[in-house]
Amino acid sequence: MPSTPTDPRIAPLVEFLARVPTLRGHISSGVQEGGLWWVKFGIDIEHPMAWRVVQELGHILNYVSIEEPLPSVFKPVSPPVYLNGGPKEYLSWIIEPTHTSFTPALCKEWLEGRLPKPVDNLSSWELEDDDADEP
View 1 (cartoon, one colour):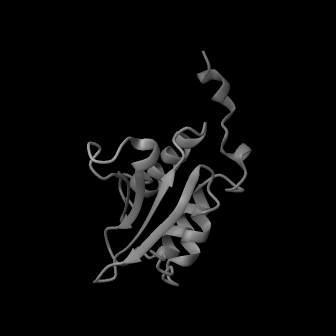
View 2: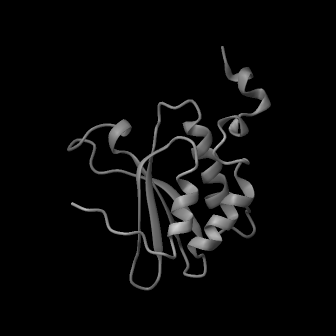
């Protein structure tokens, strides 16, 4: 089945996310009736920085401000485990807005402004205390 072309409103966000370390495979996206959009991707959960990426995306998109949270959700999604298999192959992550005012361009702006820079450089994702986590 050929992949559907990315909506031009979402393409810049998809291109940015493709640069984030640990994201794997095809990044799918779409726009629903009413203007709400979504972006779905996999994360290489065996990569040493996988949970750092999840933590950063979760913080920005779900919890950047208690008083004024972004109208967005970052969450895991999966088909039934008993029909398919485990998280290595079947766990995906989705970003979706809760209001049409949160556009893909605005989402990209928030991520660009808060994710480590340069986003595609693994060393920029490391923290000084990363070695402290080692036994």
